[in-house]
Length: 349
Image (cartoon, rainbow, N blue to C red; front, side, top):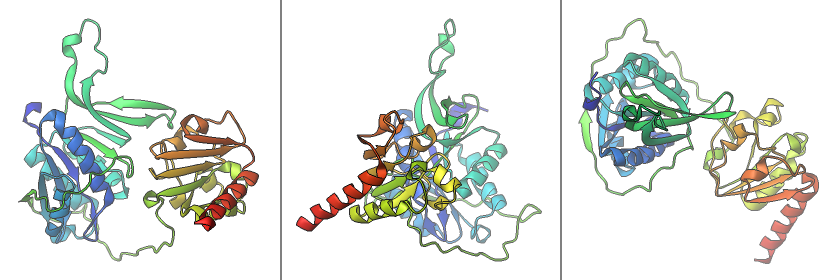
């Protein structure tokens, strides 16, 4: 393998039912940032059936090129044809970096493709940078330090430490990134990208599954990743009934209720509302952390919020280390008072 032959930052532009998933735009924003120090281009890989018309939206969010693999076999996601499509693109165009969203689809597709193209993959990254590897030169081996490597940072050992990983000897360098971690760029209306149509050919084999029926779940739960204000509760709320006071606060501020893993494990709230390393990553304008201790696994999912307000009876709770504003006291007294004060202030206007 000649590493110098590999150029470009490629993003798997996930689409479902011919609609681009938000994670694709987030990854394009990060790809543009990574491409600058490498002096290279950004390409989106769009895989599906009848999807060519989606290329313009990818261009508006930062793609210089859009490689379209369009085939009837790709109408619905299946591991084998999608893995064949993405692996074929990588073998043909030799990207230096490939980013995949850590969605249900991406977590299946990414490892499969990395194995096929004989490279490594770092999963669930929270930070991506271009830099030197090793991070600190080894005494006596300074000339062996490699430059312009993709440094992939992710929580390790249950979130108790942070690991920075590189893939210096193989290309492409591959990573999956959780939705909500990276920020998408403001779209440039009317931007155009070079559209390349590529089809490696699809011959069904014994690894192709047959989809008999697609059953779509209908949920009336609002996606907390889209919320501008989140009122999040933890084990300290005390009971599922006590979440009513959080719901009252959320209604008063025009926000949405979310929760920690402990609440989901206790069966008080559905997993769709969970914030944290094993839940969703959110970045609202305001995040209320109520009765949440602030374990690193939870903080990893909300620390990028613009303003964090913590309410906890334990003055030593770790959540206060990341909070912009903190209130020490009984949430059963503080939250209703806060709700009434907000309602009174709104009534004046």
